[in-house]
Length: 220
Image (tube, rainbow, N blue to C red; front, top):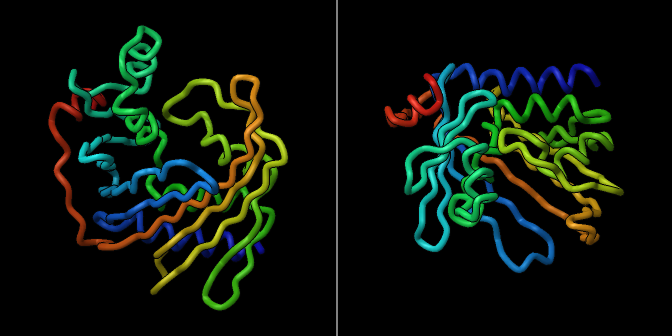
């Protein structure tokens, strides 16, 4: 079982060790009245990742590196703390909260290894490595963690989850996370079931230019 986890970590490392890679993240929420926007990201080895999403013709862009991140707003590049302060002061949270969501995004090569450590076990069958999440792992993913955007997470009960990895030529090519839980938000219980799929491409051939003002906002 440990070998399966190490295999996934190695497959993810091959992606993160490449000069760069591109990925898309799609999310489906069961019985939701809206569909989350598709996220497109480009990550550079040892450098920041540029992440974008589009909804109703509006594009939101964030730049992240490690635990730091900034999102582009009409008033310049803002951190998660900046967005929270603006929201508490009656300002916008960054285009319908999309900015805060992007700041919680992690590149899939990083996320793959992190989630592998939150599984009970991983097994390989028919070219897919899969397993169930621990309860704590499912809780964290169900609430999207406290992560980069900070803030208080809702309480999660009956949390369950699973993960699937697809590896091609020794590299991570795709990952799918399913989580469900009962979330208590503002004293109200809500049942949630979410499927998030990451697809990786252009490993080694991706390039991206990081805006200089974003670098300055990140302290790079």
